Length: 205
Image 1 (cartoon, rainbow, N blue to C red):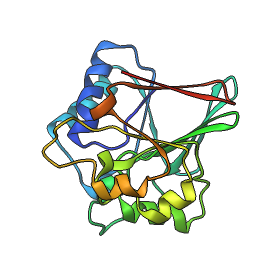
Image 2 (tube, rainbow, N blue to C red; image 1 turned 120 degrees about the vertical axis):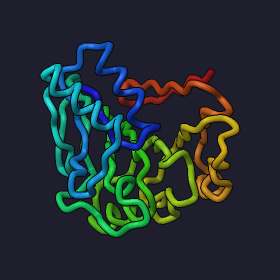
Image 3 (cartoon, rainbow, N blue to C red; image 1 turned 135 degrees about the vertical axis):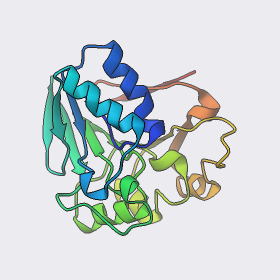
């Protein structure tokens, strides 16, 4: 299964190559047709899904995927009714996932921005997680203080390119994560998280 959180180029382009090169049985992605988003890469993505006969599943809050051996993936977002009129509708309707194995959990927030975070907070969705994959490359419009307070991560990971032109991660976000063990791909390279369901190990480099 390949998961497309949302169709912006930096999240989608590599996955098109995955569909071309590997045997993929299923894709999980949001239905953003109401937002009328389109791009040549997005069209190619859907063309490949159809040509290869890949099962396409629309992601929505409330889905649970049992991955075996006690590993569970819960879809927390998007909601049945998409958020519209936000500062960035595609980002705020991206797929948010919580992966759980035993006592260890991982929250993957893709490019969710503050408006989407507040939607999850208002709905009272279970967010507390051992590990937080920080949203939107650590930009200032994500990872608001209230969201961090509810997630209560022990470990946070920021996936961001070194010397990127946007100045990510935002110093404000880094400060908000003070007290959390923070790892960054621009400083430490590949970050690998390993768990047996009770303990968590982090490898870098």
